[in-house]
Image (cartoon, rainbow, N blue to C red; front, side, top):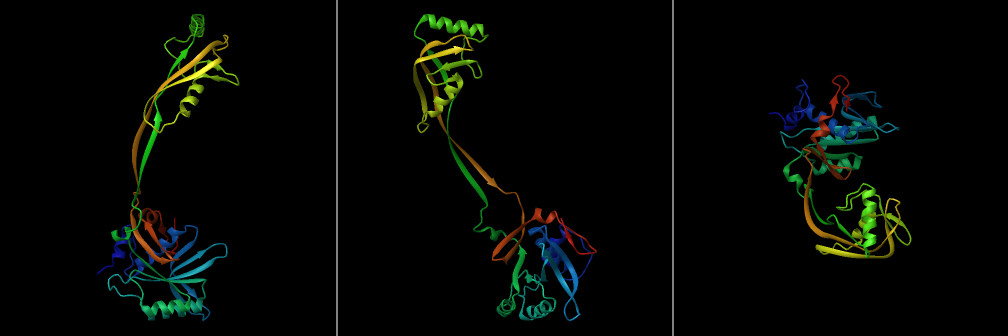
Length: 300
């Protein structure tokens, strides 16, 4: 009966080996490469220890400028559902003592007996579980982010000018016509300026400033009359025309917009108890990896 990890492995990579546990070992190698693509990860390598004896190592990891070496022992007990026992940790501890890596890890898909945990802790060997991600693993995790935005905005203001004398009205219309502008309204970008006491400003910039200053807490129509006594309005540079006030009409609009932000990533594996946290490995992290069948090195 094949392990479910054999089947998961074969969804992404091919290997002809019939050896039990090999595919799980390769999955472990792929996961460590996915977690840090700058490290060198090699599956199935023989190392010589101080005893001058060769030891088969499931996964070796070299990382950093100092070439920190990590040895990983892998146990796929998916079919038997057995926990890794003391004897396995004891045998691996002997290998670790002979090779003396910077770090040593035992990984399985089921778990560890109490004695195995005690002995591993005493020997400084880390333990972790790499298993398939289950739907129950989503409990307590964020599945999607829902955002409701309450938007308060104003409609495009309508502008009316209060010019008190007919002569001023006539000059304004004449100057508009001379500049080639229609008398039907004032539009953005037109060279119409307000000469205020302390500045000269394009009329639409002034309209935008004043309309934005109005509070937006209450929805509904708004009519603002802005006194401009002592100021002039001018078309291009045709001379200022006295202006009494400007009237702005617009509406404050409130609207709610709802958004859902959800990931389309597919979680395939979860690494539990590694560096004190659980790490999810997604399908896209695995699919970008390959392995050199001769050297066993995992590549991006």
